[in-house]
Length: 433
Image 1 (tube, helix red, strand yellow):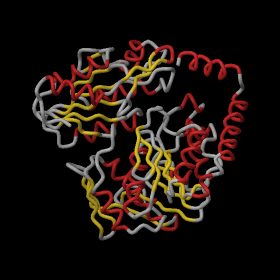
Image 2 (cartoon, one colour; image 1 turned 135 degrees about the vertical axis):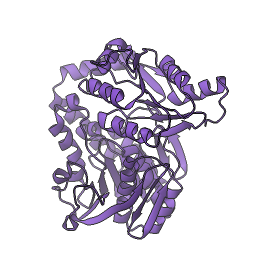
Image 3 (cartoon, one colour; image 1 turned 180 degrees about the vertical axis):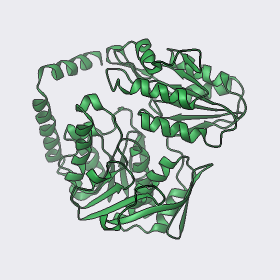
Image 4 (tube, helix red, strand yellow; image 1 turned 180 degrees about the horizontal axis):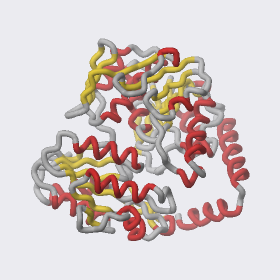
């Protein structure tokens, strides 16, 4: 692992970006040829955006399966081919070009009709989306992320737009997103625009078929109406309303009846590591991925809703030079929303964890409502020990990831959920999953 990490770093330093891009493009083309362009045997739906990709992709797959269409799924959480399901251990949102084409070939050989693929900006830059015939492209939302890696927000947005450029059939767009006007400029035969009816931005019917939610409730579960249909989902937060709307719009583009969408979404369980409730008594504990300021704020707003007690938060930020700009922003959000915030390690890579923690804390001095604990296990256990009846604990940054990336390209086994469950059991709190 260490040798592989060093070799990869050396190659990036020596080769110009254009050469690296050509290498990835060639690899994807060879893979597509080798596996016989498998997407031609499937209807492929690509889901991209900053937040909500995994949940939206899973929702689309569940709806298509409920409609009787055998479906494959590639997401940052899991892979599925029909009823066969296995965890994604790679920590990659989108598999490399060779692995993705191999997955599509396997899905085609298993007689899947659809494949739903979570698409990342890095994957797009590395041409992993090329030589795939996309039936539909879904944009969830856009907020600053991977700014250093892309060389600015405009480049990051343009990378997302390249998925739309690769799909000429059906575009599913978030009409309430600030970047809607940019994404709506890409050509598609059919456009489906979703949003919430009472938002300040009004969706123009001329933009395409509209799917709007009204009469919305977000706690203790989400509920909304589309036309005369009432949708009830056992999930939390307005962000999951948008995820559901994106999935419904994608299903509509494939002629799936609205009643099927309603039934499938009503049965959907909690998505691993995405606002996942791990314990409900004597206090609630949530684990959520939330690695951007936008997603972190939405997670905090959701867990503060109808809260009788205090909100206790555990957060960190990724190392390796990734998005350093967001560290103090996330610390300020924790200071604003949390009654007590514990800043800890997330995936430090080759950076000193203490330095990352200090950058997150910024001007927020330890001792106000902020505490610094480098060891993530200790930080989680500290948060749980502080919680009292009626409080909520939210642990963000890793979601359902099963490893932590540390110095030297090493990974150590990890699970936020397992740590919570172990602590709850040791302290004799049985009401946890």
